[in-house]
Length: 142
Image (cartoon, rainbow, N blue to C red; front, side, top):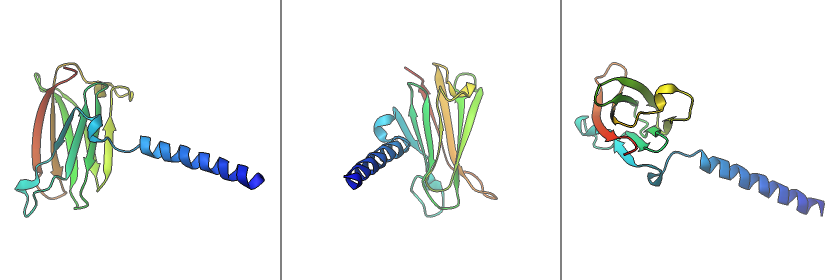
């Protein structure tokens, strides 16, 4: 009887832990209003996308990811499109590195205004010129 209760308690802990791990995983496409990738077509022999930006307007959620273990990192800059005012930046370095921001994380500029927002992202490597730069503008919470 004791072993059965112990196994049941252990199963509950495993299920609770698995649920926590799933909740902490990077955003799926269904979580995003917009998904954009860096454009590596200008790099030598590469046409894949090493950087990914997932943006959900409600709550200003951003998941910014470096997908490739290729020595290149990904940088994101966020601006107000109309004025060009810089709001913040994120940097993801290494395959699977996900950087996040959202309106409720306590950092003032992560709460984006309800206006046109410009996202600029590219790949970088020490000693090399940036590659794959793309920009996108979206009317936030529109």
